[in-house]
Length: 135
Image 1 (cartoon, rainbow, N blue to C red):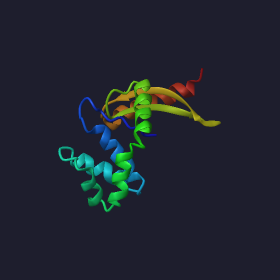
Image 2: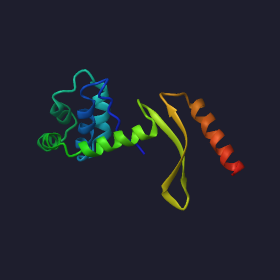
Image 3: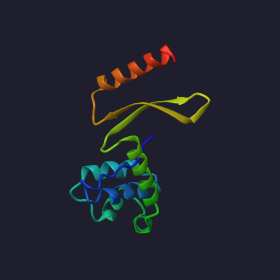
Image 4: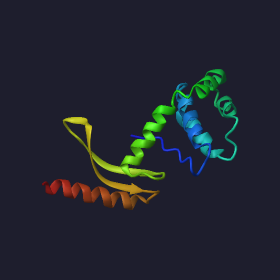
């Protein structure tokens, strides 16, 4: 699962960039917009220029951006990330889902920041070992 966590205190346009990815998603180009915005962090506006470069329907994209229709979902993601302890990106929660109900998740470990594979492997191995040992 991915959550939006625009870091507005670091980048004043982060929230609008998150909205732009979701507006592009409506036209099947979420990751393309995501990647383009990361590549052009110093030249984000006008947003429609990125939409045009990706071959999106610019009028539809602009209408989406003006509507703020994704703002509530992004704010909800930000709140959820905050509850989990995420203060920056990337952040990861290593967790298990209940085999009977995939909506039930047991969080095991919180991993902050970009980490090497070995850090993830160590946490996963420890969690699996603990789970195998049982209660």
